[in-house]
Length: 415
Ligand SMILES: *Cc1c(COP(=O)(O)O)cnc(C)c1O
Image (cartoon, rainbow, N blue to C red; front, top):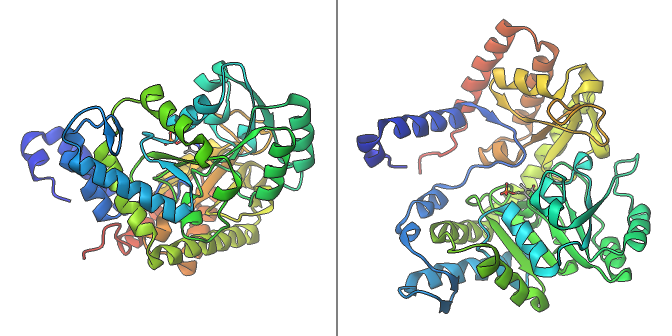
């Protein structure tokens, strides 16, 4: 990545960017929502498309000069359709949260009831957490997982019959088990609700065909493009043809103005990459690596929530396993060069700011080429760090090992 001009003009920003590059290169990134985009995606992001206003959609824009914006947006749409088998795709949502807000506004009226998953059970803030705008507009009712860690479909059905939601929402940021698409769809159908799945975390696993594709089962599917899908930061909405108009109108002019066309160009590049065979191998390897992490942590006596993982991450109850809080664990790991996030566990007795768990994802380190052997090493470090969490000297020593290790897996290998 060339930074010659930034370096010349703006030393302060240049230093921040360089520092971040070094941090990403030397650290072990295990936050489950992050990844490393390719150089091609980075290049597409930094292009003249950022100069262009292109309100509207390909072939139907408000301003002139759309020869090339139409080309890249149409490419992004066409590739996304192919990847996910979607009937209709809108690639303009700026990110995951706006994509959800847009989807809600396309099919709901203020005051309508939505069934969504509880945040502490692995749902997402944008699924109606009281702190969000959507919770002020719509009436969210939350369902949970059962003691075995599976979504309690009988309870979900009972709640659906009782609350008569207009929308039933699946999707999660910390829940790690495969969803029963058929059962979910049946429940929505039974109560006449629209079904929506927010696949933000698992879109890459679906695109890489490592897990079953849910798109044909749901009326609306929202996603981010920057998590396992390994594209630029952004959002996307897929839907059945009958919702296409409503989704497009809700996106623009309903919620957003001009699309970020440099970002859409980068989405097109990322989707092109995800269509290649190498991405299938990547998605498979991600799940394999997550299973190794799960097994290793179990062996060391850690409690893995939801009875294990089918995806790219594990949710670990560090409080009951090690007597460290999520915040302490996050801090100790950070000190040793390993980045994770503290996370609530189902019905967490502790506060969201200092919960009982940590969420650990392997999709980013898999992008760096790490496999079983490396994941075992990571699990050992995690255990060592959490066992020595007050010992600054020990953490500093591990940090050196982690840095040395990470340098062997360049995030942007020379091509
Ligand atoms: C990450 C995430 C979002 C929000 O995406 P942003 O790009 O951060 O706005 C929405 N839903 C789920 C399930 C997510 O994991």
